[in-house]
Length: 207
Ligand code: AMP
Image (cartoon, rainbow, N blue to C red; front, side, top):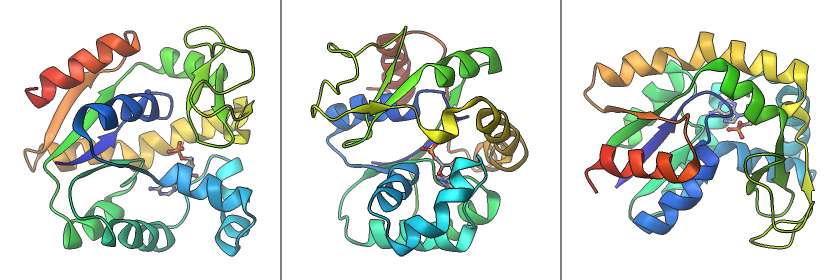
């Protein structure tokens, strides 16, 4: 199954992807994780995108689409695309080389997004997400899955969060109508606890 996870930053797409990977046995491709790994390794790509990402803006369509095309070329079965596409031109480019089965639209009000992003902590090694109130790790500052150190992403700071929400509304939210018009969109209420969102997700996919 080829799925796209759509939704504002902080909707819990990454957290749900971890559960969906277990459930569906397909890989999770997160453009944000790919960019953060490039930044950590100080590669040419990482140096190019660091400032853009820290400010909460989008990396250009050409760079992002080329990256995704390369990542998908080596995959044979299904996958979850998380954080891509984020603009109509990206969706159009993707449509030229992939036919997706469903687009999951994680629906969540702004106030929840703000509280989730404000308290988010991310693993430097594997990218897993935690929250200082809603999803604490067993040991403070340490990732449950891989033992990596947890940190606050630069783009989870207040000014960058506001920018990311503005970018989401202007550039990414139009994808909801784009995919609804193609009968691919399924809405999932992303406000409740992770277990409830997983249940909503399974229902949406008819699992
Ligand atoms: P995420 O982890 O999905 O929140 O992505 C973190 C940041 O990476 C975003 O705020 C963008 O700066 C960049 N990014 C991730 N995916 C894309 C994309 N599809 N198009 C452009 N920029 C992206």
